[in-house]
Length: 116
Image (tube, rainbow, N blue to C red; front, side, top):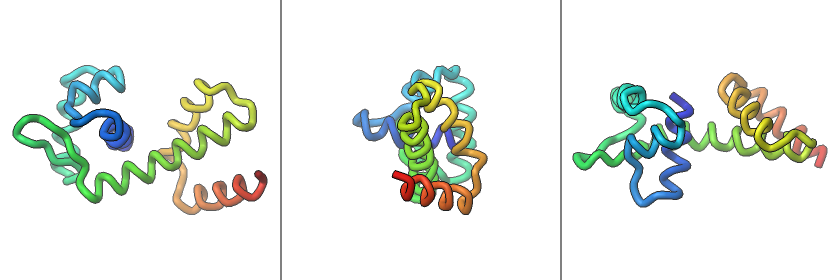
């Protein structure tokens, strides 16, 4: 769920409108898989879909997407700064961003910022 929200957030900064096919292409997922995910996100009121099929994050969806994106960006950049190859850093950050508690991320972020 978080990957979909993060992807919609990133795509909304690049494209005039975001559609399911854009999400499918970005994530390399099948269109049917993305359709099921979009239905679930709509039911959880994290996205809205216009009659034309354009996807918009709700306030709650945007808040969650921004939180995940901040973690991803921060962790990726920190790993890269420590010498981890970019492709590995991005992949590892994606794994870490979802499983880390808010408390742990706050402490880790503070420690990383102080060590710079």
